[in-house]
Amino acid sequence: MIDKNKKMEILEGARRWFREVIAKNHIRNTLKLTNPKEFNIHPFLASYLANFLSGNSNPTNIAKALVYPRVLGTSITTSFGQNIQSFTSVLLDAFGSTTSGIDIEFIDQVDGYKKYCQLKSGPNTINKDDVETIAEHFKGVINLARTNNKRIPRDDMIVGVVYGTKNDLSSHYRRITYQYDYPVYAGEDFWLRLTGDSNFYHDLIEAIGSVALESDFSSDLEYVIKELSETEEIKKLSNIM
Image (tube, rainbow, N blue to C red):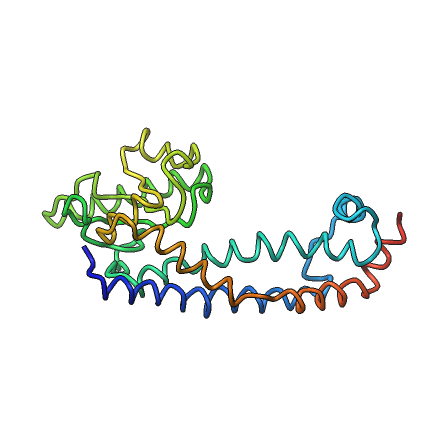
């Protein structure tokens, strides 16, 4: 189990990582949204969604209907998923793997065995095809180890899901376990195995959440919406109604 000083170092690193990687990317991507070309605008739905959101389809409300889903959902969720491996590799003693198809390798703090892990950000972040890809990668690692006279049990080939719970896991994740017999550990269970600290997952959520106090971007967001609403493309959509 990690000691107190190491834990505080990791949590402070988590704040720094979220602030410098996720938040900065989020802000940079948001500032691009003054340009209508950043959106795949659905001409049949834009005005409807603006009216649904705010009661009318003037240019400002159309801009809001376009910007809000991007900045509050798609943009930051994608950024988090793309950068989560760098977070775990840099902050934890979970070393990036040189094995094809494996993200990190670490000693499981629950059972003491070395784990070969593919990282996934959340409980709904894989699709049907990903299941077979993961299974094939794991099978390849086991077979390669066998040719080198090394045995890797199937239980040591795992999928680690950074947040969520076992009950949250989609049917695709469940297939990895029930069809292919590879464990999937999510959220608190995953972080316990990685750190040996049963409170680490919740402390990590709190640490990253504390960055929110520094993240008042409301005035800049108003500027983005205003600039977008004044473009000819958005004005034309407003005039349709």
